[in-house]
Length: 326
Image 1 (cartoon, rainbow, N blue to C red):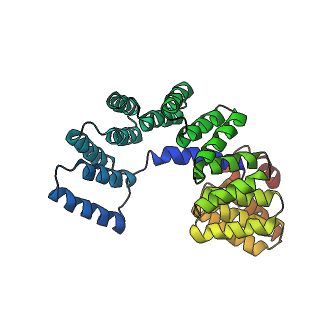
Image 2: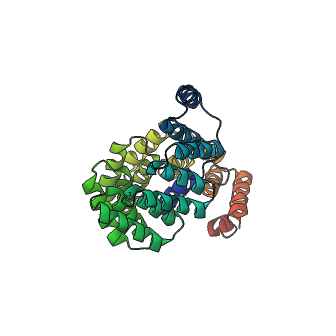
Image 3: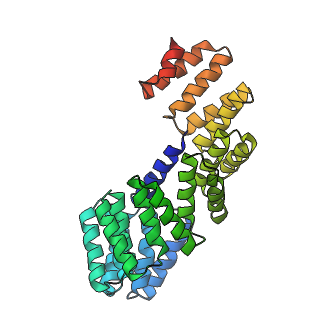
């Protein structure tokens, strides 16, 4: 599992966070909604209460209810820019990109110095890979607030997307200089240095984990960096820490299995871990391949061939699986 996949995953996560499916509400969410419902009945003209409830609905994927609440908040207070920004988020999440940008323009017509509205426009444009619009809005935000760490983070992200990693690194470092507890630029720098196999990755990824001890992306990137540089025990310690947080993490399960297969020659342990990885990700062709290798080494030729065939079903051009079957 390469680090490029992790960087791709970060982008997918950002897009997915704007397109979350409706979820069954947890008890905590139900309690939050019940409390807000009660407060709204007591203060039906309090726009902030509808704004707060729209966030709970949005986080739970209830887009229709979220949009209704934020529109009510706007109707009650047409001068509050953050309400328009929330509405833009909801519209973007439902695929209404044009309307999302239009709402942000409304926000800027209310407050031409809203760095938040400029940066939200830049963020959505960046997700759509409209780099000109992204950079224009970042620059507009920086004209208003030249020390805004979010602007430098978004600029770093845009530069990285365009392939300018040198200037991306500079922007990420500026964001950290302005906000030493800013998790995302630490993580991005760690990933960029890890791709170059630069030991600076360790410092930046450790800093990310110190800021957010539950950041599985940073833990996985650091564990993989240790693994690829033969610092095996540190890699295993991090994978185990990840699995304590998320026992279903297929990549961590697979990589611990791989270490057991290749380095420890503990074939049964490797087999158990590959089985768990596949249970949690049935499209995980690397896990099928390595389970096939494990079966082969354990003398189970029939199951090995079946796994190599599954690899080719998922990845028809997988050279190693073809060679194994031959």
